[in-house]
Length: 465
Image (cartoon, rainbow, N blue to C red; front, top):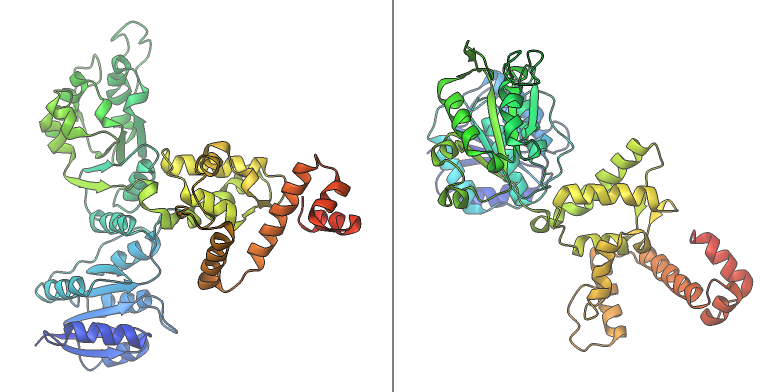
């Protein structure tokens, strides 16, 4: 039977993997990578399954050493710390596959069988310039990271599909950065932003005098991207005549400048993107099917933000930090009630909208902490439009406000066992409403809350109101 090694500092993971695989393989487990590396001097397994983050030597460090000495041994990386750096580093180190915890038992069985049946070396040569600003714990984003890793060593044409604002250009840049063309230009052009009568010249350039106003020779985007990557955003909006011209370039690997007589070789990797239903455009006769097949060699699907809400907290932290740096201001934190509003919103503008709102809140929030009142009306209006929504986001089924509040507090305790932040927010909310009801008169607000004048003055200062 093929031999598999399981390396993980968590005994439960070693037990689960062993139980899932022991009927098909001879399984040996190790609590750390150093033990496994020492054992490699005397015997070699047919497959290694290892965690990334472990005390002492990490899984990626171990993978580097294994790849150097025993490149023929396939490795499956498993981790609970899912991000694009880990995914790309795993493939760079020669990983056969990359899985995030919790993983499906059947999936790891299938991968183990596939890995032990091949003798190919799946090592990829990724550049060190990974795009660590791409946040994504959601399963759909993990699939994107894996896709980038797997195509990194190729020149394969890529079609990125996703709604407007999902980060298609950022993914295209990551594909380029982690490719053999990374030292050459990455040139992007939005097809929809340029009138079609000018787009041909933008893409292919023109010769002097080729049309009215062409007073000098112009180098187009294809030539600017020579040896590198050309990103064609919103390809679904390309005019039919230019679709034919682009198809010819993709077929012959050469093009002519407008008015030119000499063919120019096209050494460019094409990455296209669209937010449209291309198949429907084909049915309507608005997009060439043969061009679609030329572009759709490898597809990457980007999920809308509403389908990956587990990433919103990290995205907000990242964009707040980025905004503070760009605006040269102090970085701001966000209270949980405000973050809850952001998590409930459906984000029709996706990542781009979230980034813009984080920039807005960085500018507009008067204190170092962003509160519910600092959240823009487009997001905050959900609260007023959803009178049947309780504090914990559930439908009001007739429960009293005390029951709803109690349920919300229980939820906080189950998550963090710490009510200090919520207590401060509740106190702040009560004080804000009392001041609003008294039209800013502190003595009257103190009477409403049953506080003394000095107490309310101190509270206003403590709560940064």
